[in-house]
Length: 117
Image (cartoon, rainbow, N blue to C red; front, side):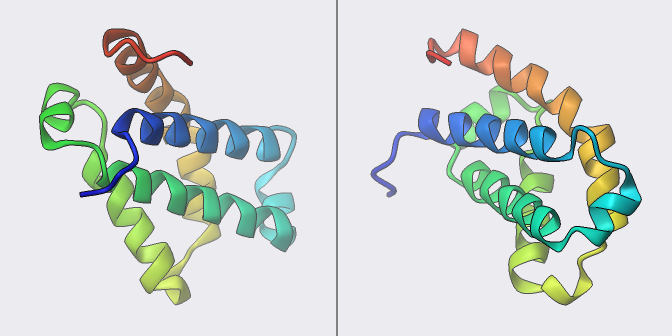
């Protein structure tokens, strides 16, 4: 069992989302694809999101089933183990389309589980 409280993992996920959004806020897809430093930092943050999601207890994952826990972990696995398959266009689409709505239920989890942001 991991000694780190799962609530801190939720904070890690939210921090990683914020970092990704801040790094890419004023970028276009083309700028993202051509900036290796930003792209690699973003991909690392996606790994953090996936790794943190693996350590959320099953009871919490069930209670917050609208959060795509499995997909977050699956993305981490591809980035860590099948890095040669990474597609920056798909990463960009995830940034634009999936991260903003992911924050809402995570923030709700914070409130419901008495986690201080």
